[in-house]
Each structure stands twice: as structure tokens, then as C-alpha cells.
Image 1 (tube, protein in one colour):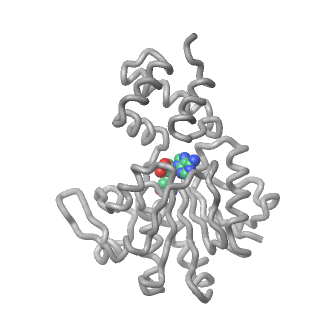
Image 2 (cartoon, protein in one colour):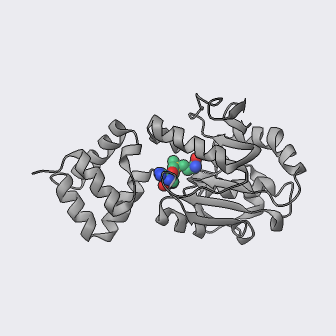
Image 3 (spheres, helix red, strand yellow):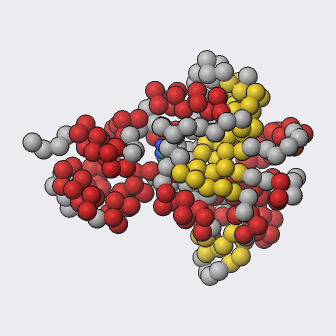
Length: 258
Ligand SMILES: C[S@@+](CC[C@H](N)C(=O)[O-])C[C@H]1O[C@@H](n2cnc3c(N)ncnc32)[C@H](O)[C@@H]1O
């Protein structure tokens, strides 16, 4: 019997630990079907057998599934709000700030946080926990090499201070910034969450999840924050049930734990 999509999902979970049932089905299935036919496979079964054998195909499938586009200072106007509205209070805290960049992709977001904080704190006082489900993308993040395109939104003061041009189109981020970020693999749908965070930045990933999965994740983010801690979300990710989830909407795309 040919695999149906339900069975395919269970096989993908077995192989990758990615639970496709928590991702919006129509969008995900359309993407997967397009990929399978692009590679010339006849259906799900043939494709599953192929990724079991071919590591390169497996890796490119995971990368494709997880959609890891990112850029520095994505939506710069929201980073301005972070700097002018929320950083002053964060800077009043004593002790090291605990900041989590969840679903950090190629590292643009946690590194942007380090550079912004470096205006107010010495680098040796900055530590960002950065996580993603995709191990390969984390290797890329640790390498810290970026195209000029991903730096478009970054204030030039940071680009001048923390990047070295390595050829016409590529830049390398300074080791002093890299040292402030600890990358690790984390699946938002199943792994334990950090605790006592002052701020969580999780942007442009929950749009891919079902409403139920999103709700659970926001609940866990709330538990992971300290009282009055801040959750910074992506520009299409307003939390509709903020109050029910013990969050107060303080600015568009910023929520505070009550
Ligand atoms: C579009 S990128 C967002 C990157 C960055 N936060 C930004 O806004 O530019 C989405 C990231 O979410 C990650 N991701 C997808 N599903 C995930 C999950 N279940 N747990 C953790 N990360 C996940 C992907 O690997 C990808 O790197």
C-alpha cells in the first residue's frame, strides 16, 4: 500500500524527530510534495527510502523543512523599540541577563542582540543562549560568515566595528561577538525550556505551527520567563490570547510576563 501523508509524517518523525503534525498542514504538504516531485521521486515511500540512505538528501530535506531564512536586525524598526523601550529597564537589572534567542537559524538574531547590548555592556558581561532544531544551521551560525544581503538592515556602526570583509560578497563576524553566544540544538515542540529568562526572542517560526502548537509554545515561554520578562516575536506573530496566557501586550510584537 502506498504511504499516505499521515504515515509519511510518522516516518519523518522517526527519522528526524520533527513532528509535522504541529506544523500547518496545507502549507507544509504543498512544500514537501513540490520537493518530492522536483527530485523526481514517485511518492512519499520512495522519498523516505531515499533520505534513509542518502545523508546529503536527508540534510537538504531537513534544511528545506525548517525554512531558515534570517537576517541581521530583521525589521529594524522593532529593534529600535527594543533598544529605546525595553533595554533601559533590562540594564537596570543586577547580575547577568539571561536572554534566549529561540529558533535562531544562522545566528543573525543572537549576534544582533550581542551587538546591540554591547552599546550598553562590556562584551564579557553578555551571554545569549541561541537554539534551533536544525543542527546544520547551527554549524553555520557558529562559523559566522554572512552574505552582504543579510547585513542590509544592520546599523553601519555594528557592521564597521564587528565584521571583516572576506571577499566581494561575504563578511565574517568578529570572534569577540561569537564568544558571547552559546548555540545548542533545541526542538520547541518537545525539549525542556530554559528557566528564569529576562527576555526571549522567538521570531518568524511560530507562523509555521498549528494554533494548538503555538498555544503550547507560548505557555512554555511564559513559564521560561521571569516575572516582567519580555517576549519579542516576529512581525506577523501577534499573540491573540495574550491575557489568557499571562502576557500583557506592551508594544506591537513585545509581550511582558505578568
Ligand atoms: C525563518 S527562521 C527564523 C530565524 C530568526 N528567528 C529570524 O526571525 O530571522 C525559522 C527557524 O526555525 C527553526 N525551527 C523550525 N521548527 C523548529 C522547532 N520545532 N524547534 C526549534 N526551531 C525550529 C528552523 O530550523 C529555522 O532556523
